[in-house]
View: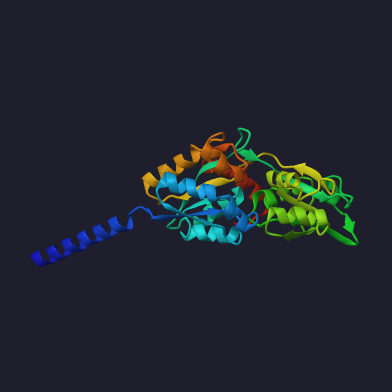
Length: 300
């Protein structure tokens, strides 16, 4: 009996040790930081070298910048713990959050882009200037060379280049399949360029990205027409794994929230984001995105 008690005690001790080991917080020597693949990957990496250097200085860790092939692969990479911190789109964040529900790993948003003092932005719906479409309602029943209007979107998981513009059209009674043929081109800039060229008659994308393309001269404002803007949308969230070491989580949060325009670090890091800084944000702020996804029949 005494032997059995001793064995049982050793088993309990071993189990306790296993639980303690398995509960150790994730604190890697190198953090993998993913950036949203909404434009050319090489450009995104190059533009964010200042962010990489800043985080290495602030966190005392090696930083690897990652740009996945598309939104879905970014969601899966976060879901399976292949990245630690990520800059998601609002919709892709909610999709990732849904997919991770009940799993071993979870994520939380901690900061969002600030522009003009606001943590929101808009989507824009544009049309080719020669398509004869002056307003959203004109898409309904219109034929171009005997065919339905072609509408270009970015990625299927994109907020401002899929869910929001589709929502705008649905509110005007314009339905996919019935009133237009949809095509997914992957990136926002591809949407704008293809609408300008007439490969698609209408397209939806992020308003800040569209205005940047016009400013750069990539898009000629005389060749496209703005049909409308969405209601304000919560900005792209920075997200981190919830199993990260508590001290590391605090340092990451502070590193982002302390960035301010007008400072040496701030001006370098914030430039690619066209941001004034980053503001605190929480999961509930994205409930409006969940409502839009549900309304347009978006799949998680």
